[in-house]
Image (tube, rainbow, N blue to C red; front, top):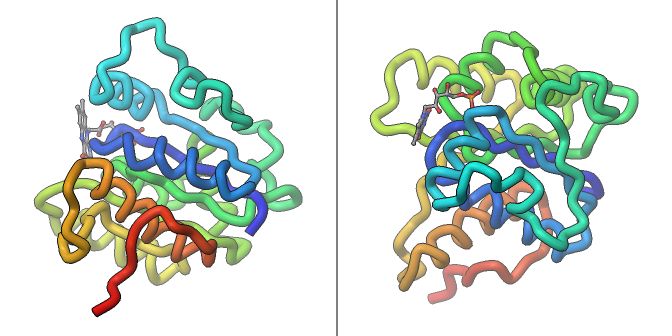
Length: 190
Ligand SMILES: Cc1cc2nc3c(=O)[nH]c(=O)nc-3n(C[C@H](O)[C@H](O)[C@H](O)COP(=O)(O)O)c2cc1C
């Protein structure tokens, strides 16, 4: 696993995606990030950033490429130069539905489409409650097409003391699925 693209969409819990980017960079993975328009708005809202706060400001002083979701000319948009994995964290029901239908509108959806058609690693981390039958159907479709559905549902069995512990649990799960060694959270050991 060398190159990873992290997509942040307009579902709640953007902190998970931002923390994942930081951890991937610390592990020496070439990491790029892309927000949907709504992903950027929700991240600013949840993390209490002002209007001027840029996408890059979420990753100050970090060596991360912030892609433009409208730029379908980005190099990772083509199967000839694909990333090793796309992780969409958090993944909105809107983006899930678009991917499950193969819409391929914008960079996140296009790269997801490339991952599925070229058998790359696609991890979607949906966040919604409750799920409708349409959401469940869409997840099943993506899973059958080779994507991994990893819901934003951190466990409590490692006895979290803070929101950071819960975030790190989630990030650790993603890193496990990417087969990356990490110490971001404890492991079950009785
Ligand atoms: C504060 C806020 C929180 C939201 N949380 C969720 C959520 O957890 N899951 C979800 O599917 N949509 C959520 N939405 C709605 C999505 O942002 C909306 O459906 C949007 O069109 C998704 O666009 P995108 O998939 O292009 O990012 C939320 C919206 C707002 C304003």
